[in-house]
Length: 381
Image (cartoon, rainbow, N blue to C red; front, side, top):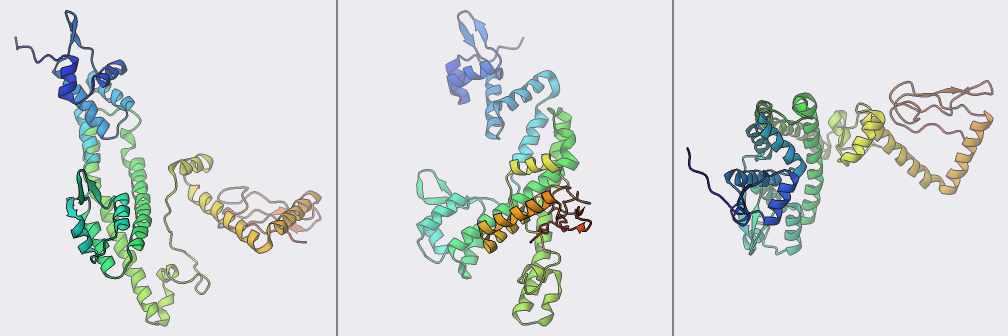
């Protein structure tokens, strides 16, 4: 018979696990920790309790809630295994780059940026996560991405001011987060959906971890390829335009760098914008995933058109105009909007034109909304 393992009082268990006595008791109440063995008048904990506390701490560090951890541990206790789940978590939480962090002193930082001692710029770099403070070392910083810092130093040496660098990074980061979110939505919908909605088995979690490992570099490779294509196309056109090449305005890429009045843009280059996830979900619930981009674009264009109308006519004039339109609609002088023939119905400015017949015998055109998200025509006296 094997010798019994170590036995811990609750104070000893707290010391070895790093959790407080109060936390251990709270975990017991939540069902995250098995009950201790009763020996005489004392409660005794063993190695299994210490291992469980370390598992809970590791999962908390990875962002899991206590409720989620309880489900995972219950699945493990039921014999479904936790090794695969922990492997999946480790794969997702692992580094998504081969780049190694470095450290830099304050003096070295100033030297790399032309010797300017700009404490405000340093504080903003810390806020953006380009630099991280080292506890107890006011003159030293951790650099999560040395490549990103090197790019900033090169751009500054080329003449870009530090505030402009910070603003550019904020904008770029928002666009990158949008791209990352879309890639995750795409792969979740088509690849990982079968592993979601229920605690995965050990085998399923291992398969998912392998898929993450295989797909991990694809996002970076796709972004690199598309960025290279866009930079080649846009930079070439921009250079030709500045050199006075009259043929520089003939390509689709030129539409993105020329003024829309001088050079109409029949097919504008999409510009990603980050939106709150709650907003996107609300729109999807309202019109469906397929119609979400058109709905947001049309709503934005309608708001911009309304503000332009306010600016041109004044609020009072616009209200008077709205009253005329309402009166005509009630008396039958103008046509009433018909349902859209395509896209999202009954919204005037959304794709698809609505057209109603006027009651005076003529074809009413007042309700006709041009497709592509334009404002509907208004009846004027």
